[in-house]
Image (tube, rainbow over all chains, first blue to last red; front, side, top):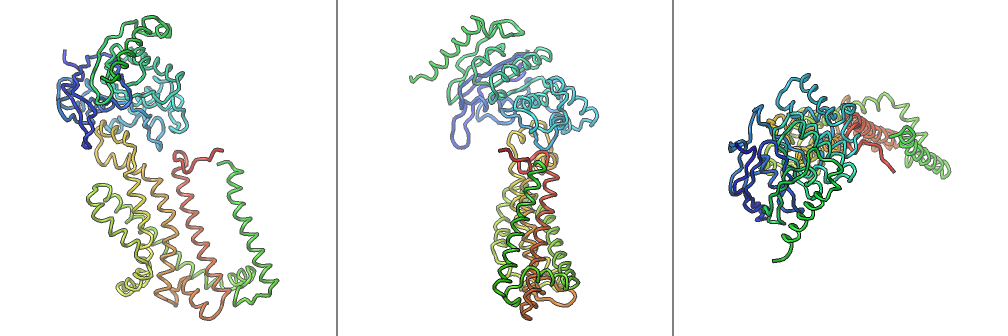
Length: 256
Length: 263
């Protein structure tokens, strides 16, 4: 089966000579939830931006559903991204923000409004549609950002440490909501994080990157039931996988 | 901003003005200072009332020049900033000349403009535009470029056209910068108008407040000089407040500059 997104020897050297990413081979199959785990500055965001088509690799290729460019106007193949910060337009209402990708695609106003409100209801923000972003908490802003990504019903959802700036309680709550949304809608997800626990809790597969210049040092399937619950977080199985990943990091960071 | 904060922001400067005016009045009366040197505030107020027809007409002329210049500066300044935002090369090629215009004193350019432009009013407006346009160009250009890079990425991923990106992203992002420039430009347009009037020295029916100051100085009519000066100051304050009110109305719900301060 054609991978949803495939990086084939994709490497990145920036114009200033920084080697951000060593050649990476990575395939995402339809419906997978892949966590890309690595320390700060290891090239995770670079890899994600290449997967989003926002950055060209210096060497190698990226393919989307087998094609060399991201899909355009293709209802079966849609790509959305959630950024590190909520990235909401402060001058637009929450509904206006969620509606943005539809407005840019010239979807009729009434239809776009209905989709945006449904997407907001899906993340528990139905009654905040007419608020402005600054009137929401950090967690609610991030929910609105996720609603905007979901409004176009993406088949590939790219998330760049979306909950990194939130407190642990909010983060756990959003992790659970995201897991529910993934199960109900079934997009392929590439989720960047530097939290081992978050990666293991959410993903079906964890790809581990070394410190800069980033390269893939492990690619492991995560056992455990779906849907995951707080019980899984407290299980021996969860702790064992986390410990294994911690050891991998320690050995990658250790001087040769 | 709460209503008590708003009241304080108005009451505090009014109180300062009242104290200063009272001290001024008391000093003039106590030392018996002649009006041709320093008139008392009450004498200036009386002159304002006595010469109201003359001064109001002059205020209309000066304010008309300043407002016309401000309107032209807004339209031309924003248009130039939009051109700059389209291309770094265009900006790099033309910005030095905009700066050149800004750093050259208007009193040095005004005589040339007045010689070259036949219509005196048009010449005065042009002088004021030369002074007022730069903050609008500089601030709006900066605002059009100061866009959240993640939002730019979002627009790119959504296949937004250049026009969509400009209208839905760059222009709203630039609004706070534009209004900051507009606040400065509103005062500068009045300064430009007054300086140009001084240089032109136009009298008669089209005489502005600067001409009244010049004439009052020559005639040693110092109370009228102060009255004209007070009107220029009040016109400047009124223009600034009008721009601030417009900025507050447009940015009130979303921009930090217009949000209530928290202790």
